Image (cartoon, rainbow, N blue to C red; front, side, top):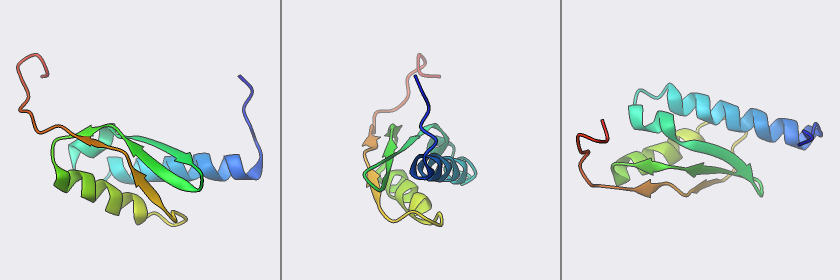
Amino acid sequence: MPVDFTPEAHTDSTLALKVASRLRSSGYLPLRDLHVTVATDAIVLGGTLPSFYLKQLAQVVAKSVEGVVRVSNDTIVNREPATSQDI
């Protein structure tokens, strides 16, 4: 698949990488596993988190990155406790 090297594509991928890096360095382990993409001038967060607090925190962290104008937080909150199979 060809890679688009237009300035917009480069900026979008760079912005997504910056957001992902900020989430990973937040100190909250569940935020490290979120998926970060860019669509229609917004950062899109995806994945599963164990609480609504972490969902909101992920959005705040993403919005704190310079260049982020809008965040679409598509994360799902799964409050079920982890089982031995999940570990």
